[in-house]
Image 1 (cartoon, rainbow, N blue to C red):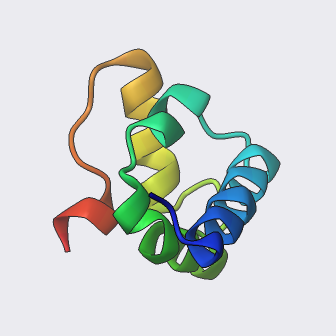
Image 2 (tube, rainbow, N blue to C red):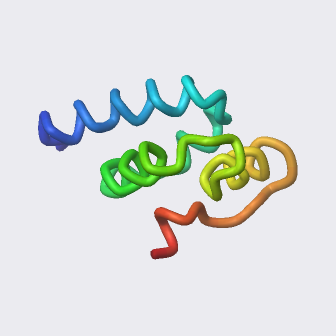
Image 3 (cartoon, rainbow, N blue to C red):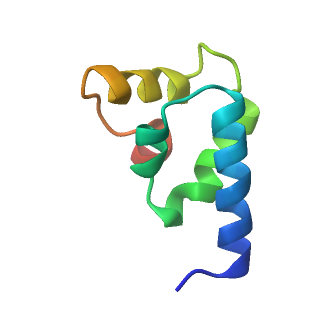
Length: 72
């Protein structure tokens, strides 16, 4: 079961993800226990050239690998 804090982080991550025009498919691959880490990463590196953005683009088009926030 999700903690309310996890749900709030998930909502914030989703909004930030959409704001940066990242693949919704890629967002769905991030496990809930990594939402906070990915949210903090995306807040720090919101630009189109961030690793997370590149990973999202790969996932939506070419397959790709684990996002930076999963492999740390």
